[in-house]
Image 1 (cartoon, rainbow, N blue to C red):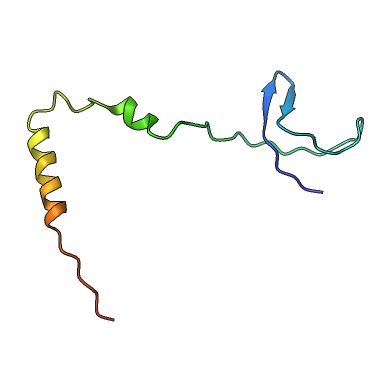
Image 2 (image 1 turned 90 degrees about the vertical axis):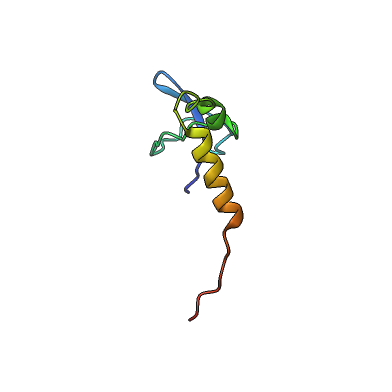
Length: 79
């Protein structure tokens, strides 16, 4: 049987998020991989907000990039 279940480490124990369905006392083989930290969507943007506030010319450069994107024309590529 192979199951993937997440849990939380407490010292030498791991508290699983759900029951394994294996009898108590049964020996098991365990492979452990640290899960990626869960983050709220947009958290990275909020952490970096204002990072370029003191960069001279940033607002003008960003405005030009936005204008270029708005004026971009897409074309089909011939096969």
